[in-house]
Length: 438
Image (cartoon, rainbow, N blue to C red; front, side):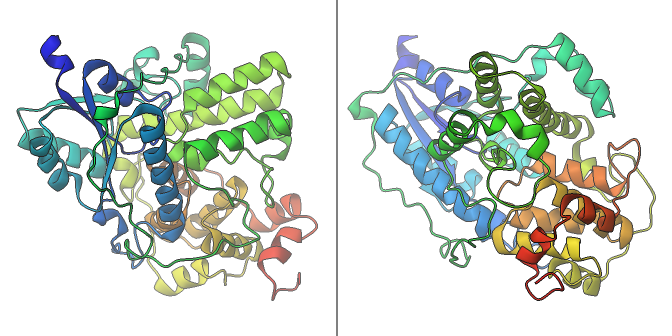
């Protein structure tokens, strides 16, 4: 034990960019005298896809840069832990650190989708003398606490939800690790790349954006404090969540949840606190309901693996899909025959964000009206969305394209949806300034 306390542990940050309720950080701090942290801006995530656009565009990249800046500051100021940042592939950079700092153990959040897992697998195979520790740390309900094995996860969300709500309990959050001594800090320089370094263009935020927020753990808690405690908007969430304009129609916590600047557990326990101190109603329940949807898509990807990225989806449907470049250009540029679709597509192109209602509509239009390859739409969302989460994005695209978990295989009527959710035309007017609504 004495020998282990003198050893050095490496916390490899991926989509868990926080210091509170962070199991890898907590375990490493408990087990090792010295702790170093690492984040890699992997060049593969900023390369061009086969579809002709960047895998990660400027909106999410800027939010990520801000998140890493905040993480680096919090690790240093609150825990005396240095965050080393590299613009390099992890499987190339990490072995260098193992030698330079005599690292014996690597701690990270468990990832299982193919791209992320292949990197972890390669690292583990090529560094047999290193101890690897990974944790399921992105769930609301931990996999060990649900009564299903991964192969037995129901294909219908309602069945999953009812059983989990009845039989499972959300774990308590991990406490903040003890602060290390000053000697733990490294003098090694660590430059966080700019947008330009990543091959992306600088931009100013569009004043119409429904998501004008900054990245990082501090900003996540500022948003939660505002939405829950200052405005008490949480009490009205269920009524307003299908909104289209402004910052407060929904919690907007999805982007911080996606890169792990805040955990689902933290949000859950804050809702429970709100229910005790302010009120408990359908809206407070509905936010937890949505967190459980997020869990569900993670469990579906654990069950089905790479099927969530395949044309047939998890239903293995033999539908005939088109791949029309002209249709794609008109869709992404907001030049289709549906003004509601157009307004939403202009919003995501200008801001990297779109409402949940909008996402369902443009997805349905692309896959079920135009009959275009749904994976192209999913990849386009992956590129642009600030709150991109691999499981939720691809799970929702399957769901709304007829190859996923929707037992009713619904198709949205974009015209009636516009009349219902944008009756005044204000949303369309905001984004289609040259349209009949201007």
